[in-house]
Each structure stands twice: as structure tokens, then as C-alpha cells.
Image 1 (tube, rainbow, N blue to C red):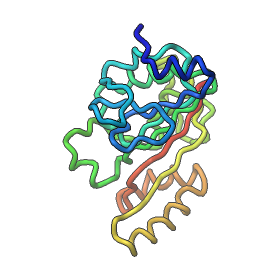
Image 2 (image 1 turned 180 degrees about the horizontal axis):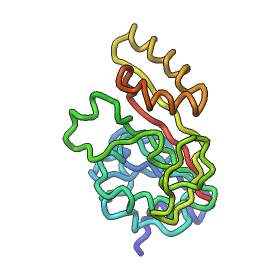
Image 3 (image 1 turned 30 degrees about the vertical axis):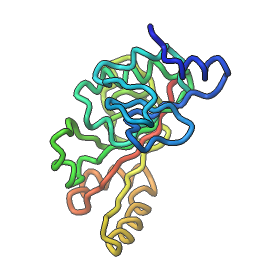
Image 4 (image 1 turned 45 degrees about the horizontal axis):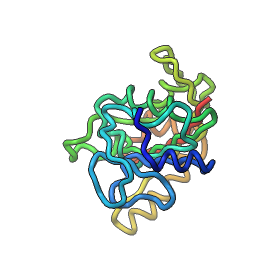
Length: 199
């Protein structure tokens, strides 16, 4: 395996290794940026459809992405790769569009939907949610620390209302489930945020 120099340097100096998938030109400071397309802020160019073969097993402390996973055709492969490269206790943070987001459908590069239960299929069975999903499709055992439904608008007054609605919907896992079951088409949600830990 050809490990990029930046990973080797951080590993040799015992620095935390934090990876941003799909960083583009707006990479967060201090992280290793990986993207499909080259940019001066991109440290490693890679196609996520092929996994993360340039990263060793159990080598990454934290990995995050913002609006990337909805573009991935083979999501299961990439999630398995993320699990493989995270250290035990490593954190995976994800921001994706919620399935009720009306703008989701405008982007022809979007491949899949996300909801409250999506990552439960890759998680242990200690979910706080009432609805349980099968977890026998794979042997991954993430623990979902947090899920957050984010409501916002580009219109100022509407944005204020939606932020208040975010507080109401995210007050409990039960409220989140009730929203997704009966309120999501009256009040669309723009994003869903997940934080999960590798067990």
C-alpha cells in the first residue's frame, strides 16, 4: 500500500490524524483533505467509489464529510472503508441532505436519500430510536452518539422560524421520530448530522 507522505509524517510524530472527505477548496485548517478533484487545498486526490486504499487499518482518529455521501454510488463499500481506517474509538462525523429537502432532487449527481435510521444499519443495537432496523447486513459496529435534524432557509424571517423548529424537533429522539413519520413533508428538513464512534 502506498501511504501518502502527509499521513506518514503525522503518524510518525504522533499527531492526531483527521481526514476531511470531499474537502474541495474550503478545507478545514489542520486536517488532511481528500477529494476526487485536484485543488491547491486538496492533499490527496482519490475516487471514493474505490474506497480508501491509501489509508492503513486503524490509522485515523477522526473522519468527517459535508455533503459528500449523497454522491456515492457504493455507500456500503465506503462506510466499510471508513470503519476499517478509523482507530477503535475513532469518530465519524457526517452531514448529508435529509430526504425531505426539496433541493435534493435538483442535483442530478445525488445518488441516495438519508434519514434518521440510515446509519443504524451500520451500528450496534443500542439505538435510542424506537424503530429498530436489521443490523445483520454487515459486521460493522458503530455507535451513534448524536443525530441532529437541521432546518434553515436562505430567507431571513423563515430561517429564524426554522431554527426555532430545529430546537423543537431535536429535543428528544422521540420527537425526531415523530417528525420524520408525520411532519417532514409539511416542514422539510435541509440536513441531517450524524456523529458515530467505532466500537
